Amino acid sequence: MVSPPPSVTQLQKPKYVYFGGKICLWEEANFHISSEAILRGLNVFEGLKGYWQPDGSFGIVAMRRHYDRLIRSAKVLYIPFEMSYEEFEQAHHDLVKLLWRPDRNMWVRATLYGDEGFWGEGSTSNLVLTAYQTPMTRPAPMNLGVTPWKRGSDLALPARVKTSTNYQIARFVKIEGRDRGYSDMIILNESGRVAETLQTCVLVVRDGKVFTPPAWEGALESITVDIIESLCQSMGIPFERRPIERTELIIADEVGIVGTLSEVTPVKSVEKTVYGDSPIINAIAERYHNAVTGLDPHPAVDFSLIPAPSKVASAPELTTVG
Image (cartoon, rainbow, N blue to C red; front, side, top):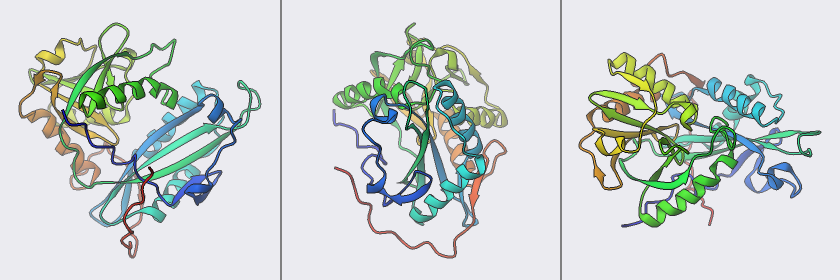
């Protein structure tokens, strides 16, 4: 099989980042080798996506909910974080306005790094924002594999903590999936049930009902899944959080993945199981996309709005890393 294309963000090198409480050049955002960010990989993060709206404004989806989840993750890992929501929001706005393009949406990674400190004593933190251009089109359907690597338990690496250390397994899985020609891989929990994929949650459709694994099964406490649940309620589609056995991937009518960057993406196949046209997943995907782009607003989708600029100049072609 042909290897999947690289991520829409992994090759980009934006000119500016937010680092140390201010906007600076990409090359100036550096940590000392003895910081906890480097020595222990100490960080928590959020991914936020922004979309151009019909009135010309730019809306970042569910910013308050991402801020609150970042605080919860930081609390679990004992990382201090004193920034107010208003400061958090303004930092995003300042960076986005320097990098936005009229023909692209954007994805912002907000990473709170452990900076000074030693095993939780004298700890300080540093919020870093990096923003990347994303296409304005919906994600294409993809093929998934299932990996033998397992999601850790709450007593090992809690899935509810959105930290890069939780993605060490995902790195193994990504390399495996790339070698096998899959765009993404499903990770099972220690009991052999579906947890999530590398970076997204899983939806399974059976008999017209949508199911997704709950957080205690090793899935992230997903903001996007919460939105999808509300959309399904308004669309009259039954939605339930329950454990999903691996064999249900074989007998499912449809499968999809859900995440801030992936939105709602239909799955064409999982291993040797091929699905059909995915009418329910596609309907949810369209409803979600129309809500976040402002074409058909929904109360479950809230925005941090940046007013319409007088003019957004077309940026030069994106520079890349590597």
